[in-house]
Length: 278
Figure 1 (cartoon, rainbow, N blue to C red):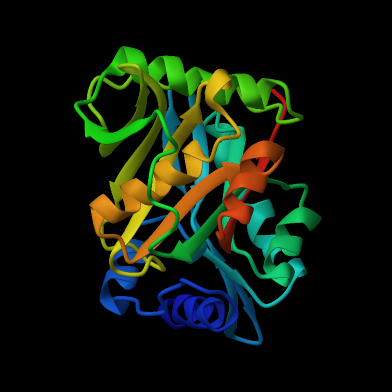
Figure 2 (figure 1 turned 45 degrees about the horizontal axis):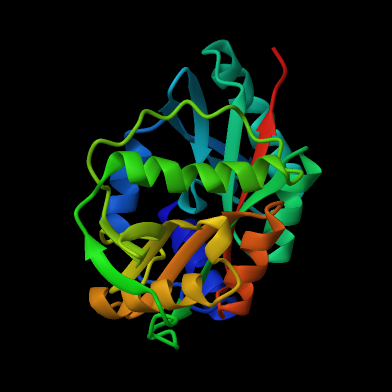
């Protein structure tokens, strides 16, 4: 199965920008050996595998299928694997199933055939990103984490998604008392009016070295359409000395989708969700 994972990442790297094909085979074998893995065989040969991590999300738990956690030679093999695995997850009360796939059409279509809907997209681009100067009247800086200010701006993302056809599960996440990364802000007249979190990735499968993940990007309504979000992203990237920038957004949040695509972020991976009614 480790060889199948290696093939998956090599194929993704051939077809997509900013995918690192290098994998630690021993680490993959160890991860698979420690998990409940469903395996499909044909004529004695392995033609697919599937496993998942059960990830708590507040009051819910998700079955999280990462790109290295599955493979298949065709959609029928994947259907057989999912039909074997899903009842066990459902028996544990896990009704949110999230499959991550590199953005290769045949792979994402295989999950769509099983009732999964495209929900999230991860894009990446090489750094730096220009322009890097703040619009007139604004100051950009890395600030000490302020959970109240961050929550106020993060709520703008929730508002945008509530006005779009997102229909996401209710948020259960606890409030962050510590920043998960570096908090970059834009200020106008001493007040924080925009934010962006920059999180340096640990060495992770498929993620190139030097990648910085950007998250929680938000600009207060009176300060939009001035290039502030783009300059804040560029400023954060420069301060982080990033080689590659990476961001994830909901595909139904069309303003966010347009921003990241116009900023040069090209598709890397897709998150697809299936919610099983109780």
